[in-house]
Length: 96
Image 1 (cartoon, one colour):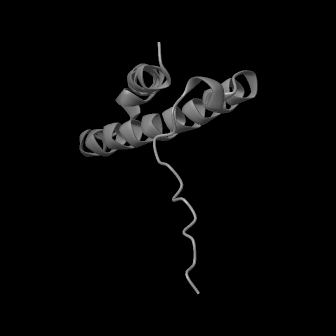
Image 2: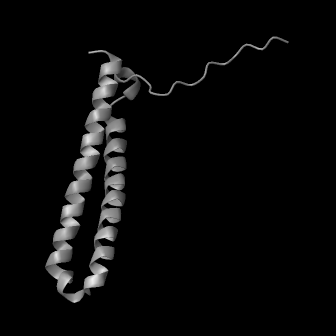
Image 3: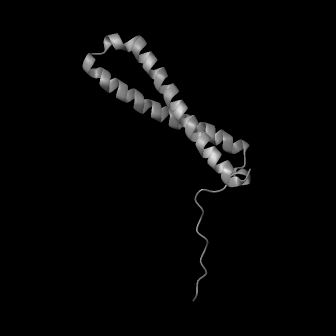
């Protein structure tokens, strides 16, 4: 496999991992909310609670994604296996 294919597969895998972490975290928070807090919260506040649960799941997934990515970058040299997505502009020669 070449570097471009490795990069594409890594991006697809990382995206799938992030989506799964969001879903798992949201389900975890929903189960905790329904189990312990649903009977104590007024009906009008349930919509706000689920909105906050969704936002919290996104924040937690971002944190988990960053931690896993940092550990992965310490183990694997990305320059050896992956093609850069955004290339740095080459320095231009000055014609003075």
